[in-house]
Length: 299
Image 1 (cartoon, rainbow, N blue to C red):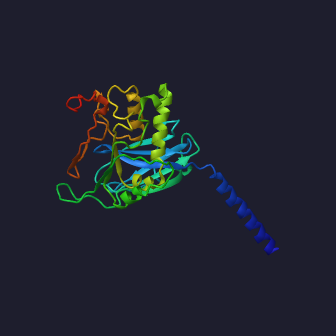
Image 2 (cartoon, one colour; image 1 turned 90 degrees about the vertical axis):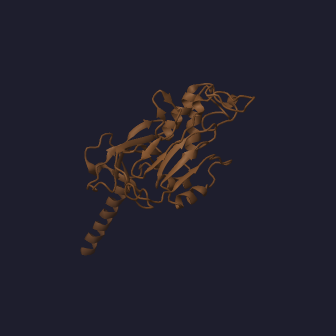
Image 3 (cartoon, rainbow, N blue to C red; image 1 turned 135 degrees about the vertical axis):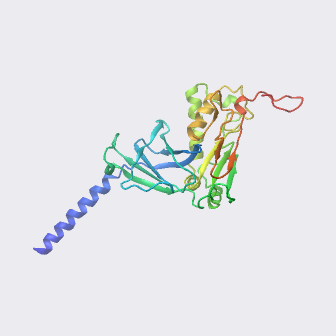
């Protein structure tokens, strides 16, 4: 009798565990990012892309905050339904060592913290905290351009090597993906051109080896010609508004002045606590044709 009861409990336990596992069978996956960037000295943006639509929550804790249990997740904003891209903006103090948690729920509005299911957690700035204000220190700024791979889906070990250096930030300084060089190779409609841009960014962003870098440091970007349009494209480029829209979608850092959108398409920001200022200027969207006599650009 005792053996039979024990066997019944084991069977019931197996059924219960199996049902719990089945409940998570439709769990979404983060396929790109999370990527962190700063849009001002005290505003952090968390960017990520999922394999399907769901309700996502983000919880950020830094050295200037106390961890809260249960975690108070903030619902991420869906900024592109077609590309399944989500953002969260958060005021945060610097310097800081951040922990970022991302959770999901199958409910559109989450009222109970137990409805959040944690997907992943990350530590940012693993190289340590910067020194106090006004004190000397060592900073690692990594940067790169011309991210072009002839064959997609091949390994790109360069990103693993960069992440191993534990940079304080990474600057994508142009040609972060490659579009057709000939204007004739572009679609005829705005929607189709936008899809072309987004497909190119998707391939670039989902590279497996790149995720470790995106998840461990701050990222900023500007563009050049190949991720703006055809080879050596300038302000006359027909789809320059689509180019800027796509850039802002995939790299949500600061993009210049309200009356000169795209003129300074990067985060022109100062980390006062680091006593450093970064200025990255790319004027391609305002640039006119090259003078054949001098070789100089007008505009």
